[in-house]
Image (tube, rainbow, N blue to C red; front, side, top):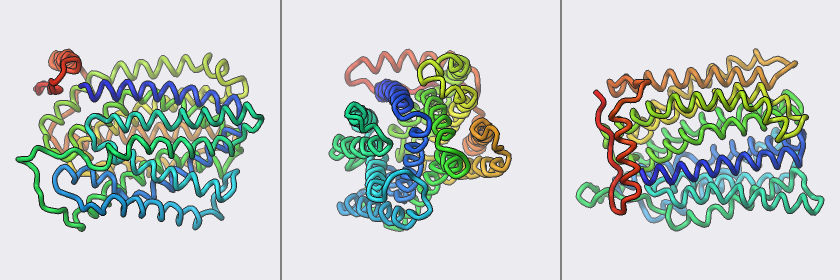
Length: 431
């Protein structure tokens, strides 16, 4: 529970930082400038994800079971750098961004390396380096951008330079801790080296999920980049960024579950933890989402300015989309932590089919609102499929009502988190 509490605190802090940076970028860049920055982030993040090949995730899973070659990590980083640079140069003529090639190449490579280390850092159960890196990057980025704005150079290019610097600085705390994932107990460890074919197969599974995940996260912005103005994209980006703040609870739970259980194979314990957290968080998070969506009617024009009023209905819709998507990904940790990423892939692929099928329904009069509804439908299907796949694979139907055992688990966990040397307790099977 200590790891979860730490990660929850770090993710909440990150949510607040993200909220603040969203306001700063919107206020200082305006809708059009915010839209230009969003396009850069969307394209660079997509390229960075494509360049990963699932290498970091697979190494986290297998390093707890078998020894990896000492050359694996530098070789993997080299592959990520070369792939991200090659993709950037190959796609430059079809990418629409408001910065030059050199700057775009830098942010793509920096984002790719940062993403690799962030994935690798999740191999440490304490998640200290991972949480620290997630906080450092946006803080450095916004500080540099604010300095540029103070010097009358607060452009989208200055914001991109800040993002590059933030990505580079955030790698520093991960270099030592994230090199090798924590091993299993000595009596369980298999000292044989991992065959390359098995690593490649597992990496392909994680890679497929990552590709679908990045499409889910950025296809909407890329679509708007080509089908509307930068101002409309900027308004949509504000709504989208705010809606992600609500997912901090599910995000924290997902990170903690993956860090604790990936590669260990404790299926029964994992099922109990997923079930307890899902039941306990479900209704409070849904009620908070509804309340926050209503609060946006007043908060968005007040905090971001009257020119962003159009973000209000988009935010209300995307708030629920982000919450449902967070629930879905948390349940899918059952599949990713136990070496069955193909199951997470199925649900992601089906929801993306709904997303692309809904794109022709996005009209020209209010494309941001229409697109938000399409994303909500996609997320709802993803959640339904996650619950169904979970039941099919485990034989356990996830309940929506907390049990007495769940509350006992929380009390014992918090007590253990403040007691040095005590391990996180596991919830009892409610059945």
